Image (cartoon, rainbow, N blue to C red):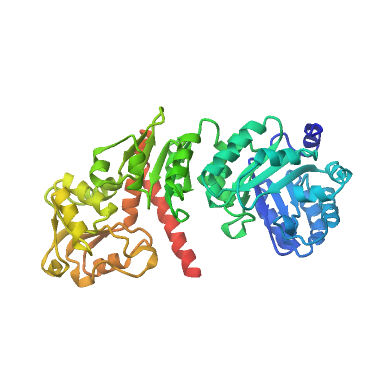
Length: 518
């Protein structure tokens, strides 16, 4: 059984630990401590991963000097053995000796994995615990299972914190972890989270479920666990220090989802308008898994992206007329009674940028494509009184859409003799720097050319349109307008459109610059 951890914790730690511990890695001691010095003013809670150093013992004098310079810092010393997922290849005895010396150098906490505890004598752990607060940790790199049983095994070894880390293979694994934290954190000081891309929910919301703190990386390249989020993102994007029981949860769900810019744009809007809410990227490999999270967490609203815009419809309790006509949903609201209502804001994403430039009544508009995005564009523009033409690679879907929306189809060979006010690319052609364009330069005869593709910021199609003298509308405008409409539906507040456009523009520029370096 655990012997009153409070006395140990009070001796070694400030009364309230920050919510975020930043894991610091390096290839040599000088680099480790240089990084720590650069971080500690904004991040006073750090983890020194000594196992990443070829000779971790050489770091000890520098750690002592670090605490002389920064006495307010709180540091976990970790030297995880290779058999437990770390990089240290020494014996259990050498691991414990190193952690003991790290405690003597000033580290207030030491992390020892359960596998090490099982191999050493109880008095060895207690001797270490007399020098620093002990975190007893367990990592499951394969799944999320038997969390209470794991904790029961750990409780055989008195510790100040029990750290239980699993791997999320589904979104629902986060629910399992958070229910575990809610149940057990009153009796024990726990740290709990799920690793992996799908574990983002637990990394942000675990602290409100009962986890004493969570872990973050210095940068995306310096993660010490799969799915680890950077400290900057945890604080500035997800506002983890403000997350509480009243915080509403929203998210974007799709498969894949890793490159979505929606969390950046939506969390900016929520922060700007002082809405107590957080917006997460949810990698949903199955709709059933996603819907369980919506119910259990609960999630108050969702952005739905590929491949679920059509498949989600049968799970909704009601939809607006746009969504019914289009046959696709990109926005869900969860009502207080748990019912799910569907909307489609892609229409706003197309119509709003055009309304700002031209009168839509009677405008001749060519829509390229006949899929979900094209359907949203066609129906939205027809509602505004536009004369809409559809061109698709295969004629049958275009003819079907034209009949449903009372629009017209055209053949590609007729393009050169036709002129339009606007051409809208509603196909994915040109996405992710593919270098493709849905039309040749000599086929573009329009005053405005609007590309729904927003990554890259200027597609080959837009470059060709510019060369033809057309005014261009980048896909980023569509992305921001549809997101702004989602924000308005969820919060009832006007969206801070300028701020949303600014942050997503910067994010895209950074992505382009990063890709250019590779």
